[in-house]
Image (cartoon, rainbow, N blue to C red; front, top):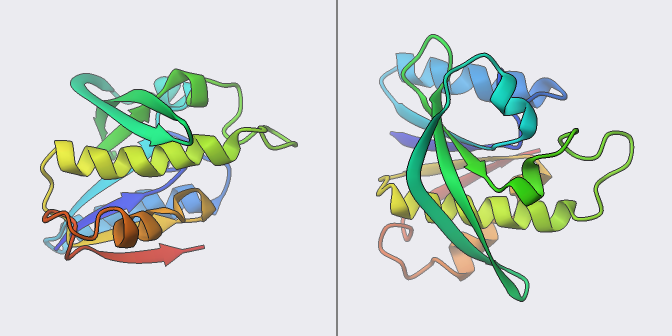
Length: 168
């Protein structure tokens, strides 16, 4: 089974709580069972200092966020001790900040940031030509992905049979 894990956190790239631990461990274990997981996470400032190699790619994404089009690009790494690819969605205006979510007080544009992230992940799946069976969405930051799949991507061949699993 081809499974895309979408999360705002994953160890060792970015962590504020237990979600990051789960999104690091579960894909590695599923890979051991013969599945084909891939992980998507924002390219926060702290991801650049996680100690793992991160490669630039030539893959750019552009998505609609409200009344504007926002561009980003994909970076590539791997989960430690595995072959699980980790795609980091880079958009410095949204993610090159001191804290993941605002540190004590939410960033005022958190909704916009994660609308971009959710849409960028769906575009990345298309651009990478991934044959995904399940998108495993984690926490509120990825909560729009099931809605986008059923409304905006319902008739798109690559997406029409993707199941979603939402964990909060």
